[in-house]
Image: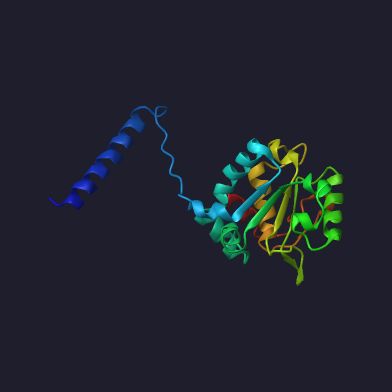
Length: 210
């Protein structure tokens, strides 16, 4: 028997053993297959002003955004996927407080008007996050071609139906849809829904990127 055949036989034995154990002792073993992510992808991500815990939480949720299902869902919607953004242009993620303590040029924004608009959005207390795309309607908004995502503290509080609050993972996906090129697309309920409620690919992307 060849070495290749021996290796295949060993793998079959391991898988068969795992199946038997899981059937006999269903609570004793959980096998989770995780799609490997090239570590170099994270070199294109810059995270500012969150502290260790916040930064770690963001990196943890970002992993699902670089998987094949997530990338394919973005591609099908005609948007730049998080993987493309990270490896081609880069992404900058800020704590929303930076809008109040930093000047536009320090944030990589072309205009101070943009900073003022987003700061006003957060001042309403409703926004969990906001994204400044690199370009909107042919107008350059960031100085280096990287989209800026600003995240409010409420994004870390967990999902809540009663407070119309998304979990951090979904907040990130929502903002990456904007960063990927999708402008605000309100649904028929307008103000009472989120700003992508009318985007036909929204639910598919959200599910694929969790």
